[in-house]
Image (cartoon, rainbow, N blue to C red; front, top):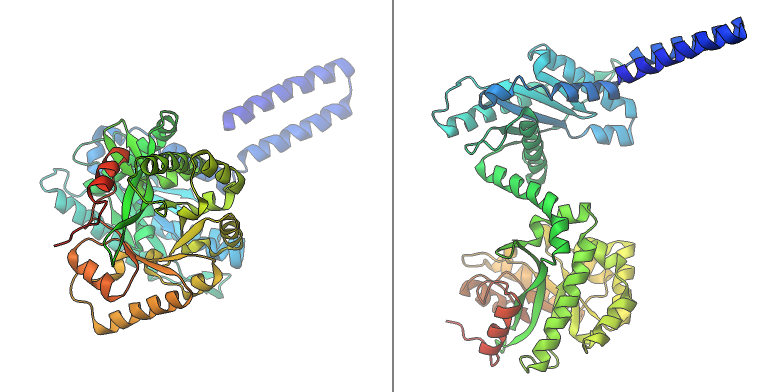
Length: 479
C-alpha cells in the first residue's frame, strides 16, 4: 500500500514541476506541492485498520513453515467487545483491545503477537517439547497454556478514562499441525485456530483445542465450500425419506423428506453439515426447491404404484429463508403438475419462524391448503407461545427430551401436559428420534399420534424407500 502511495507521489511531483515549468505559475506549484505533502502525511498516518492489514501480512511469513510442527496458534476473541461498541460507545472496544494488547506485549514477543481484527488477537506459541512423543501431552500443553492466558486476562479490570470499569469475555481456539500434517503453513494453523474458536462459541466453551476429529470436520467444510456449487450443477442433492408411523396402528402414514448431498455418488452427507456453507453461497433455497420437486415426483410414483393411500402425508423440511421466500403460486402449480393434493403436503419448520415474516409465510401456505408442522423442542427449548402464535397442524417432540432409562413421573407429567395442551388446540403430536423400544413405549405413554426414528429405519433413498413401503404396507411389527 505504501509503495502505491509513493508511486502516486512521484507522479504528482513530476506533473507539478512540468506544469510549473510550462506555465511559470508559482501559485499553482505551491498548491500542488501542498497537496503532495498532505498525501505524504496521509501515507504515514497509519490507522488501526491499516495496522491490522500489516499484521495479517506479517502472518504470511514463511519462517515458521520450516519447523511448523514446533508451533501452535491461539486465536483469541474478545467476544463481548461488539456489545460494548453497539450499545455503549464504539470507542470502548478499541480502547479495551489496545489495553489487552499492551498487557500481552509484556509477556509475549511482538513477533508472536498480532491484532487480527477489531476484537481478535492471534498468538504464536512454541511447544516446550519439540519432539512429539505423545499427542495427548501436546494437547494438554496447549490447553494449559490457553487456560493460563484466560485466567491472566479475565482477572484484570479494564478502566476507560480512569473511571468506567469493564470486563472481557474470551473465546479461545487453538490449532497445531495434526498427525496427517495437512497443515503446511502458518496460515493453515491460523485458520484451524479460528475454526476452533468458532466451535468454542457454538459449544459455549471457553477453550477448544483442535483434535483429529475437528481437523477432519474442517477439512470436510473446506471441501464443501469448494465443491458445493459443482454438486448443485451435477444434481447431487436429493431427498431421503424417513417413514412416519401411526403409534396406535403401527402403519406407515407418511414420510418426511430430508435433504441429502450424494457427493461423488458414494458419500451421503446430512444437510446440517453443509447448510451454513450453502446459505452463505446463496444455494440453500435452490437446493430446497429442487428437493421439493424431486419429493413430489417420488410421491406421485408411490401413488401410481399403489404403495401408499391417498391420504398419505409427505412432510418436507424448509429452512427459514426458504419458508419466507417460497413462491406459493409456483408451489401450487407444482402440485398440479404431479397430481398431488396440497392437503397431503406438510412443511416442517423450527420455532425461530415466529418472526412476522415467518408467520405471514405460514399463513400463505395454510391459505393454499398445505399443512405445517413445528419442531417446538428445537435446541432443547419448548415454546408454548409458538403454539399460540403459529397456525400449525403438528407439534414435534425430539428424542433429546426422551430419556434412555426409565422416565420419571415428574417428566412424564410435564410431557403429558404438553400433549394435552397441544391436543386442546386440535394439534397432532409426533415424537421424532425414536431409537429403541423404550423410546416407543414412552411415546405411547405420552399418547402421541405419530413416531419416527432409527428404531424403524434410518432415512432411505428413493429406491430403498419403495422397498420399505412395499414390505410394511400392512404395518410394522415391533419386538
